Structure formats: structure tokens, C-alpha cells
Amino acid sequence: MKTINFKQFLMYDNLDHTSTFEVDLREEVADGLYKTSNGIAALDLALKVHRSDGPIELTEDEFRILDAFAMNGTARFIDSLRDNIFDPEQTKS
View 1: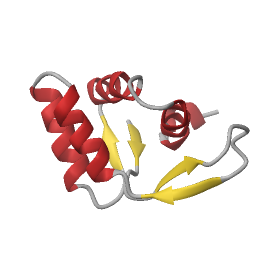
View 2 (view 1 turned 135 degrees about the horizontal axis):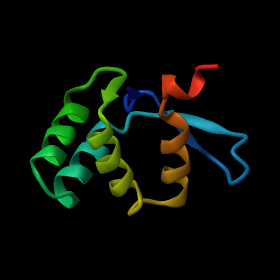
View 3 (view 1 turned 45 degrees about the horizontal axis):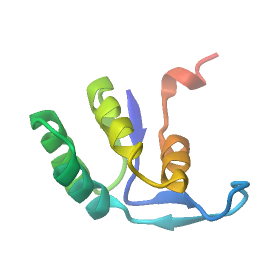
């Protein structure tokens, strides 16, 4: 399962991705999901993000909802989001 930590989210600060800053995006992401995404699964994800206090695990469905939501964000958010997601399947040799 993929994990992400919206409480300690590393946001890119420049185009070449050499500088980041840490930001707590729980409220913004949860509110954004609540306001723009459809369905009970999106509501569940919004509540999961809002109530989190560290890394959360994402099901494949939750990841798809989050990815679709991110496509409405800034390029900086999209790039940062993708690099904040930890997927243990991708790190296996």
C-alpha cells in the first residue's frame, strides 16, 4: 500500500526541485477533496486526511481519487504530491 504524510508534506520551492519546505496540508487537502470530489469514497478519504496525525495508507481507490483531485492543483502541488507518496512495491529489488 502507498503511504503519504500530509502533516509533514515536502513542497517544492522551485522548478528544478532542489529546494523544499515542510507544510501541513491536512486541512487544505481534506477541504479540497470534500468540496470538489464526488462520492462516499472521496468523503471517507477527506475525513481520513483531516483526522490524520502522520503518514496514512492509501488503497488503490483512494490513490486514484487523490490523483484525480491533484490534477486540479498547481504544477508544484502535483510534482510534490507524487514525490511525497511512498510505495514499498516500487522499492523492492
